[in-house]
Image (tube, rainbow, N blue to C red; front, side, top):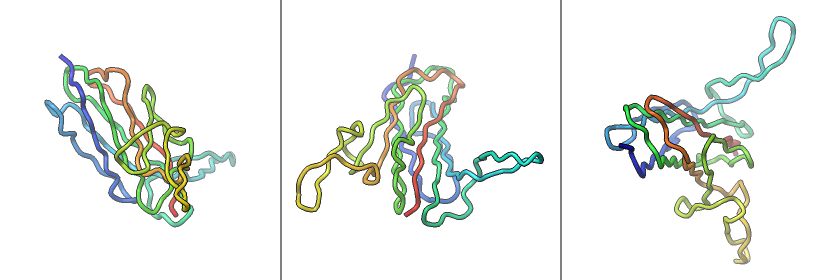
Amino acid sequence: MRIKNLILTSALLSLLGSFSFGAHAADNAIKVTSIAQVEVEVIDKQGNKTLKRAPVTKAVPGTEVIYTTTFENTINKSAENIVINNPIPIASEYKAGSAFGKDCEILFSVDGKKFGHAEELKTRDAEGKERTALPKEYTHIRWTYKVPLAAGKSSEVGFRAVIK
């Protein structure tokens, strides 16, 4: 038996810190954890520079934050039709092309209600003319996981946003 039509909303309530909660699904099938991180430059003993992710401790305008949501199947059955909705935090702008999620269809919204591919999203300009929405106008991202998630397995989705 598989869990069907599971919708998870991972509300990123704060720009700083992380949180975890169990999804309200049959048999508490999916555990969801979301974190906010930044990339920091690390220099090794040989002077080589690399980027490493670290928890957000300070977020000032211009800071690029990486939001990652991990979802894990905690029961002994496959789960399918998993959908994760994330709001883009207030006072930040989605970084175009940064949404990621293996085996996922990624959709966007400018109102949190209607979702579509980036080129399908419409909004109105100051004169009331319809136009394609800009990435900085996105308010939510939705990932639809397209394959069953086996028992005990996990996957992750995420995106980058810049603090205004």
